[in-house]
Length: 172
Image (cartoon, rainbow, N blue to C red; front, side, top):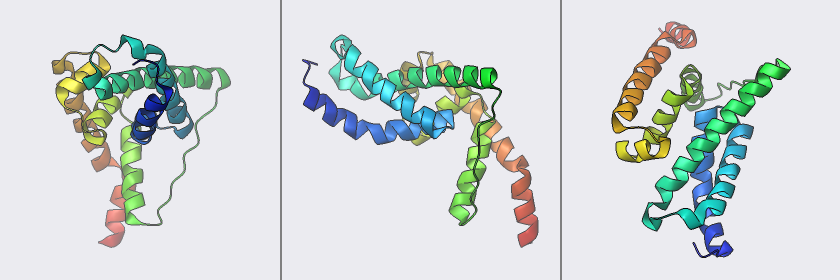
């Protein structure tokens, strides 16, 4: 908080892999996730003097990351509308784990960014409901609602995935 770049570098280096993973799950785009994580660290460095409770650094950083993801999501959507491009998707079914991850990725793609963000913060980063509420700036009731609806939509998407039914029929 006193401007020690080396100390902040250590904190940032520890947090960056999880931040990039969370951003990738929220944004569904590796480049956008990288940009959002980097932007979040820049904002955190800039805003560090305003951090009132240093013990809550992680929650504060997650809140900055969620905002950076929202900015990236809006920027990329605006760019796609302007350019008329469609993001590329790659699928690899070399192993069952990759197939399962692909199914989850497709299901997550169907969720709104709000529902996807809540699910990533809860189940990927392991944040509690109050921590998620703080990170997204919404009441706990909204967090619970987004998690419940998001999980229901995720379950429906996984059950209805036509690739899953085809794979299941082949093994039967």
